[in-house]
Image (cartoon, rainbow, N blue to C red; front, side):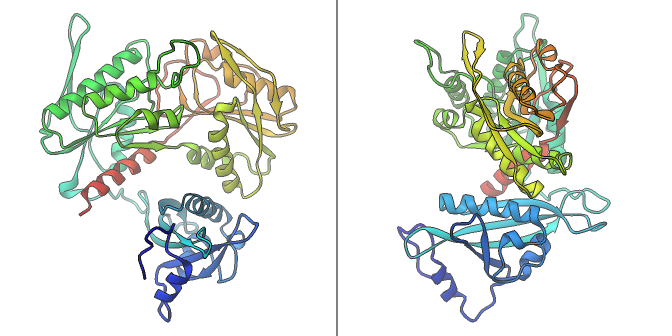
Length: 459
């Protein structure tokens, strides 16, 4: 096959010529259907059976027996065709009662049409038993690639979950407090020429402020670099100081950029975080590799089972939350295998006062999910929930990745029209919130760490 050169991708005709008269093996080819958000199976059959169910050549994804997995594939294909870049993803799915769960790894490559656009994809699939299949946990075999995973005492509960998913033990470190409020931390293992990951969530509480936690993290990263660590990755489930990412008033700070500069200054090699408040600002401010993790699929998978048979609408509590709410809505739509409505709430904030009453969308008779990246005081979410209640919503669920929950949040979120609140376990808050449920996202971080180690260890 000729090299693609300046073209977007290899063409479908190139691939067909290259495989003429030969089996595709573990490969599928899908072609985008004109004017429809669907894909037709052009070549290959057997590899898809375990994941999509029986799908014959000429049939579309929408005809696959496993509609939930077909919706997942559609979202991946859409992304590959939109960007023109290949994508490697992993999905978890069962194979029937008693068969256990399996991990389906899918490599999706764009294929170019005559006009230079990507209109088809080549898909390679592999399947293996997932962690938890059978009676014993199957830990990864790290060998010489085994990384060090460090966590401070306050982050150990979440870090221990990540370590378990990786088949690792947390690496030992010493934390020492001095009488005047200063502190130090040091690794209790030799990190020379080693790959080190430091997990620290940067929310404040009654014992350690945001500044305390940030300072401890940057000092420990510097310590690892001083003692010869080959690479240090900061794994920050909640990244602080991201609200102020642009100057909206004269002489405003840009704290998002300053945090990035502090991490760079002590030699961090990579940052992994989840649901950054402003993705573009963080990407522009940090001059190190950045891996941004998303939680919407975990929430959608968890909530889909609760919403069977209900009319559902996803509400963005302000325009800043619109993109992440839409990503969640699409994921939920895939799990439910039916349309999910959407709505938007206006919000203006100035000098700590929130205003705005405009509301777009119909939520009457719906189960509503108000979706955002964080809940702190709860004011924004409660306003949106109240607006939905006044417009006839049947039930209202609040979903946010980071449950920061300030002292006043419990009162704000105790309104009778709020039926449930869901947050990820990226943050541990001491505030008691009614009707709160935590969703474990540690496997997402474990997969990200495993992928980083595998990439850096590749020849």
